[in-house]
Image 1 (cartoon, rainbow, N blue to C red):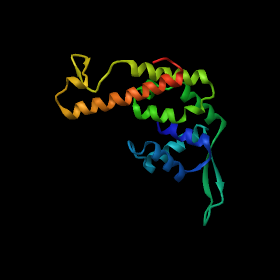
Image 2: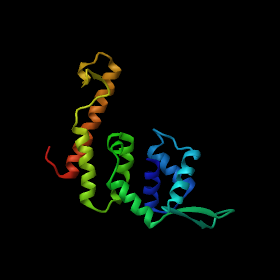
Image 3: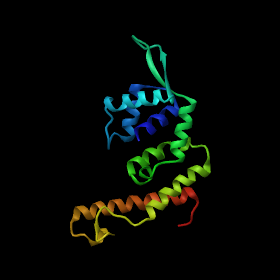
Image 4: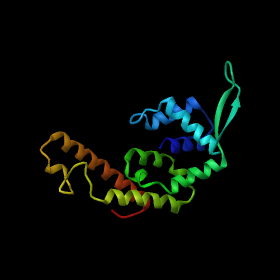
Length: 173
């Protein structure tokens, strides 16, 4: 998820590490704050892979700033990750939102639609946070108001996303 966010933000423009950290935190920080000890090793991995480079630019006060720039192989890797997401990137809501934030960088409309159809199929599969005998438990079946609330909120979110996916894919209700 972090590497995808780095590649995605750098596809939009070169960024200084601090600016990149701020953008990633805005996208995912409410769920998973990004520490320097996580971000900078990820940047180094992407740099070693040849997917980004550093470019020195004059600093406003002192030393030059190191700008991170996405390379053409990095753009190709971003497109590959967007076109071929792992199952967890389709099923995990936070990973899905990161993928969705950068899906516009996938130039092929058919490939974008294929990713959206995978998410649509996932959402159409009955599921729950709670199961009895392997069967998903519905909100109406629970006495616990907090678990019922969790399932009610999740259902509303899923319905909104399903409606958006159907509209975006041009499918009837």
